[in-house]
Image (tube, rainbow, N blue to C red; front, side, top):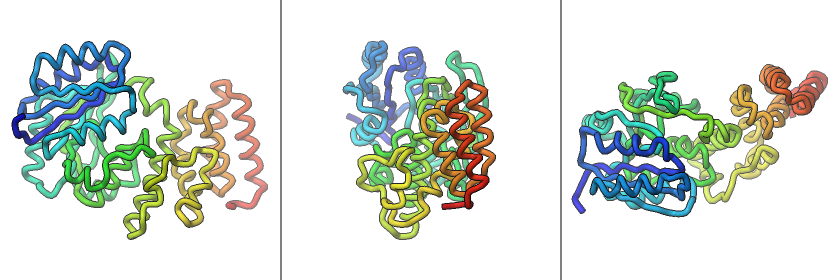
Length: 338
């Protein structure tokens, strides 16, 4: 083993159509002194054979194979294995531009007080065609702190993270699955500085099967709870979610008031989540409509509920639209707030 400054960490699960291109974009970096940890998280689509072949071609690749354990467990394992002080994230269906690492490490040389540095990115489809640019991630630590209640803060797979800071905050947390990056950024912001460089150095592949699309409701609830937990820590109080095995689901959000030991947390979570569900039919039909109905009953803005009813009717969700419309109608005659 040789000493190196950088470890690269990629978790792969059924990325066969894209993974060879993703690996090549790392091996072709202009900054070449790194180890490349690839955690194959139980792939069943041919990714295993591709990764084994690629690992045999470059000694920098450290291939780890395991049964499917999920992204959080895979990333925590990879961080624990890393020999370097800095870990660069990468996803198995994306591409890093050739000078990504060189640019980020140069930034860290000039800003030794930063523990995380990301990049701007371009969204591409499965054929590699540009969909849109995402170049508005905060470019300095002050802007990052000011934007923390908003999403997104940083392109997770484009980040280089200080291993010491990562370990100090306890790594990724399983209860924040699907928003594990946001929870991590919030906790890291309490011990170090974070931002992204100006340049677009990452090509992010967008497809309808991604977690972002399939688990929007769960992700939005988790992010809202993570923010409330951050506020507790920032006030010098313990994190109420530390040690939990799971967060309450959409039907039991009122449990949050008990978990946090104060009234109004569930209401704040619903107020943050409701507007994010309007354009996702899967989210609306998997509990999102009920959440919006509760939000309105608590005195929230009725406009999200009205839009949700219209969208559900448009897609033939008559029963769900009727239930939400009934809740909306009752809210006009009930006292506002609970």
